[in-house]
Image (tube, rainbow, N blue to C red; front, side):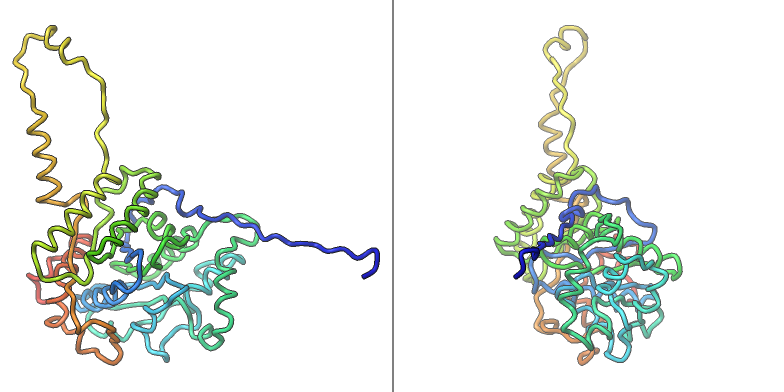
Length: 360
């Protein structure tokens, strides 16, 4: 080396974790439902596939989005190789950081699913498009670039980009509901989905100690950001549930108590000198604290509407399910027995008639 030679070290800096620090967005005009879990293998994507097919059979217009760009799978369940669009959500994140707008990219991101052949429709935005799948060696580089931030140096976060895309999609196509398959774990995209989309959040888990331990971490972090805004926005789905009422009830109560402790609005405590008030006002005093406790307990254990819980039964029929090769599994008489409780939960969220009382 010459004496004028020198080395330059380039340090790539970006803001991380920003999507976990925002307050929960207000509910969107078109209902959005996040399918999320902290561990994989709980049947989250299969449940979304079943729900999309079930509601499309009722005439509902569904948009399904695969946000799990690191482990894509929803696109291959809902689309054939021939109908997969050229670009996917990963391409959108990369190009949006370079200034591309949703209206520029949307036509190349979305494709209709063969499952929407009934009265409704299922449009799909896969994680990876057909052009990316032709050159899989580029995926890791695209993932790295997707989270770098915008070209002008301003990091708006994943939720900003995704929210803009969903709002544009809703403005040009009259969807009735948007299903979003989130990445498992505590990734930035998970924070974007849970906090930034104005969506109803479904938390999938199985009845195991590690499920409650993992969700305790998640809920503790969600509680940092406006905990009293979560009531009515979160539901729990017990996956791979046994057909045992006591077991289901035990799972539901554990989750409801954890959610209530972490996310429910707490009453404001005001220091009042009751003894002094008793001497000032000549009225009959009744201690209602015990009755209040009973009422609160009834709300938690009987209604459970603060944070509702549904159950998807363990079924060999839907283990390693591939709808392309096993479309008969998506007949209503087949999936209702396994997913009936879960589908009724979604009915309540989007204002549909209960599943078990309909022709669907």
